[in-house]
Amino acid sequence: MDALEQFRTETRQWLEENCPESMRCPVNGMYEQVWGGRNVEFQTEDQRTWFEAMLSRGWFCPDWSTDYGGGGLSAEYNQVLKEELRRIKARPAQVNLGVWMTGPVILEFGTEEQKLEHLTKIAKGEIRWCQGYSEPGAGSDLAGLQCKAVRDGDDFIINGSKIWTSYADESDWIYCLVRTDFDAPKREGITFILFDMTTEGVSTKPIELTNGEKHFCQTFFDNVRVPVKNVIGEINKGWTVAKRVLEFERAMMAEIEETAARPADNPAVLAKQYLGTSHNKIADRSIRDRVAQNGMNFEAFDITMQRVVDEFTENDPLAGMAAVIAKYQGTEEDKRKYQLIMDIMGTQGIGWEGDSFSADELRMSKQCLSTYAHTIAGGTSEVQLNIIAKRVLGLPD
Ligand SMILES: Cc1cc2nc3c(=O)[nH]c(=O)nc-3n(C[C@H](O)[C@H](O)[C@H](O)COP(=O)(O)OP(=O)(O)OC[C@H]3O[C@@H](n4cnc5c(N)ncnc54)[C@H](O)[C@@H]3O)c2cc1C
Image 1 (spheres, helix red, strand yellow):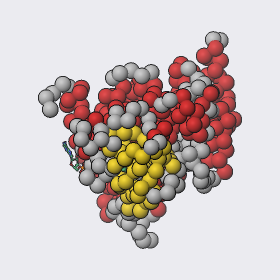
Image 2: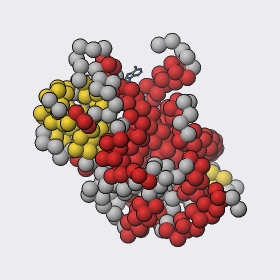
Image 3: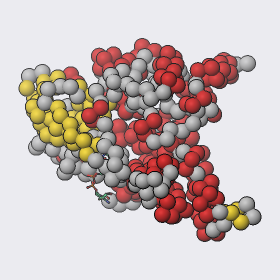
Image 4: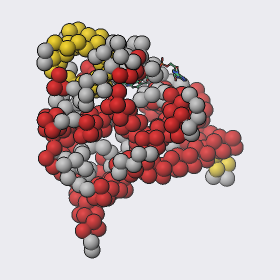
């Protein structure tokens, strides 16, 4: 047996022994996920066991160097690990923007000092990160951001506000885009900077979503003093770093869509349950067609995503564009799936509270609304289509 196959056998056995049964199915909503950080919380002992097991191997970041707390796996070995995790439908043991975005960007643009300071903490799940990009006047037109950072010796003084900052009130650090040159063309005066959310002058105010959750915040910066050494990449050249993060984010969003499909939310099963069967088929013919189409689309998406995730790890220059397409397709298909489920469930699908709805029915109506949000987060579907038109199809602006 060659070394790679040996690794597969050992990994399979290790996962068998260390991944609890309840961690081998998709999460039932964001709140079942374990977010790392200073205040990491476990809702079950199995979550803690799985978190600690993966941590012990450095497998939150399997392909990072062991010098930075990673697993030290080469691309080939990392691929085997991914396949084995996928085979048993293992949940991510930790969810953290640090793993998906801050870490990769520090690896690519950071100094050795920044790597040593941040990567190990990310790889160990000790710090939870949030993203300070959008502002009240800058969403799709992100480069129009106005949050201001003025140099004061070895520090920047930051003033302004960010909006839609997911989990800002629960995060430990933020990676943030600030304007450091107001005279330069808008993409050339932006700087990418990191700071601790407990720094004096940082405050957050939660915003309630249409589905009742409160994971968004408006985040305010009032004379926040941040060392210049926390800049990633060059001052005024943050747009390049920012775009790279968006590529990572889109890949993450697509990956979430791929792994988040809950077995309970299967349109075929629900259609039989709510609409009945005829000759063991879904009774309603038009719903049957839509269920089949949705199932085929997801199957195709799943296979394509496996390829996208593999290409992305291997730094293929096309992977960034594949992530844009996958983000668009994955989130739009998920939205169509929940619209279909709402049509299947009829009035039972629009419950908000009350005894006439089961817990699953109440969750489903909220989940349906969340799918709309996913087509906006990380850049709206329209913006993804613009990027595809321009950078993949070569159409004029
Ligand atoms: C679930 C969720 C999580 C998020 N988390 C974060 C976060 O953690 N940090 C963060 O910084 N931001 C976050 N956001 C914000 C997100 O990045 C923005 O909402 C998004 O970029 C859109 O910006 P906007 O809301 O200002 O809408 P706008 O940019 O005002 O867009 C309004 C509408 O106009 C359309 N539009 C705008 N420009 C064009 C164009 N050129 N061509 C065609 N149509 C266009 C858009 O598609 C949209 O339909 C999150 C959003 C969501 C929904």
